Amino acid sequence: MSTETAPTADALRDALERRIRAVLGDAVTVSEPTRLTGGASRETWAFTVTDPSTGRRDLILRRDPPGFEDPQRMAVEAESFTEALRAGVPVPELVDHSTGHGRAAAALGSSYLVMDRLPGEALPQRLLRDDRYASVRSALPYELGRVLARIHRMDADAVPGLAGGDQVEQLFAMYRGTGIRLPVLEIAFRWLRTHRPQTERDTVVHGDFRNGNILVDDSGIRAVLDWELVHRGDPMEDLGWLCVKTWRFGSPLPVGGFGERADLFRGYEDECGIAPDPESVRWWELYGTLRWAVMCGHQANRGLVDGEDNALELLAIGRRVAECEKDLLDLLGLGHDDAPVPGPEPSTADDLFGRPSATELLGVVREFVRRNAAGGDPQAAYLSRVAANVLGVAAREAALGPELRTRHRKALEAAGFDSETTLAKALRAGTASADDPAVAHAVRQAAAARLAVANPRY
Image 1 (cartoon, rainbow, N blue to C red):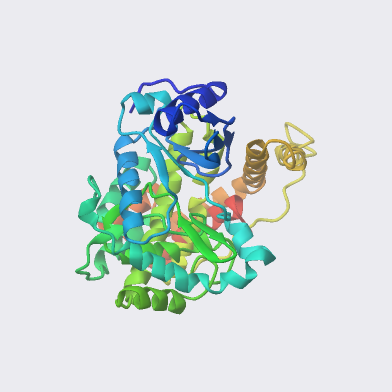
Image 2: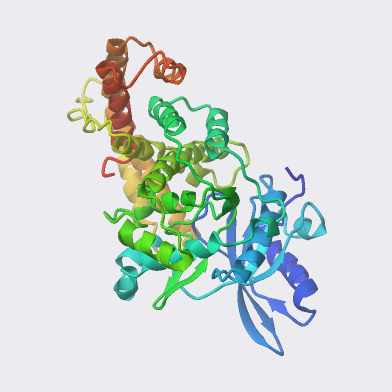
């Protein structure tokens, strides 16, 4: 982890200009950078370079949050761009990147990439709902299959430092590091270990190929973005990750919300001559759902670190583990209990704190934040919407929490456990099983309770 101090927002333009002039020439000028919304793991800034001889050029800066740098990963990502272009994968042109903890990284506060800003849309909600993309949506699964096949034709040996290894065990190590102990996740890890697919392929894996990281315009796919999780391994991992329910954003269609798996598989086979194995893709889809749950827990832990300026978004992501639990139960065929929502909140007439209740206070603050989310700075508006959602979670927990905790404790006692952590450890050790109806009910009840608070509309 670097100890370099990041430049302030006001100083970032000057730092960028010094660095870009070193690459593109002393005549260029750099506009004030604008922080873009989204992206919990990295900062994204848009800015414009003007050259008197060649004109204007729109660029993007992707930077590790200062204090959370990973210069090795950033260097691997930069090398991946070069090899991707050679393999015919659409990616932005890379203008500059840091090579470690040297002067280039220090100049911008942490490890970074600078690339062209291409025209197009990456926001999933717009891609899935705007009429502008209606004509291209149905063709995207086939095209996504073809692009993935090109990624998997990349020469893994041409990307120095590209890591591999057992993805399940690496994810399990990350899971243990979060401190989370949830029965559903333990059941999923056990299932993955006992149902591993066989593969002889070892390719470049993008690692985050999904709706949200694909740039699209009226003609189709313009670029594949965000290569920070690139590694080598089973190429079916990318297909499974693309089909994870989280990346459908409310659509019932499995491939990023755009269409059907059959079209994705057909595009892949037409491009490289290899037909994907549906069962292998399903295994990786379950792995991807578990992976997102662990990543949510990891991001929440980051948000609890003092000085983390993105704490609001990171902590909000932590409660999304509940969505993954439901998805995992469905994929594992274990079913799920309906969200156990108790009745109306008891009267506060005789309550120590009286009216308004905590739920009522949180509700009015939430509405205030929601009303003030529109207009002004896009980043502030985005975070205001996140804050409104967080207040909703807190209000539901205040109202429903006492009754849900009582039900949770009774379900655990009926299964013979004093805590959910004890149950999770027993499932890991094999001394408890989801085949036991009392255990299965306790697992489902807890997952449904968390979802009722985190996102009852999921």
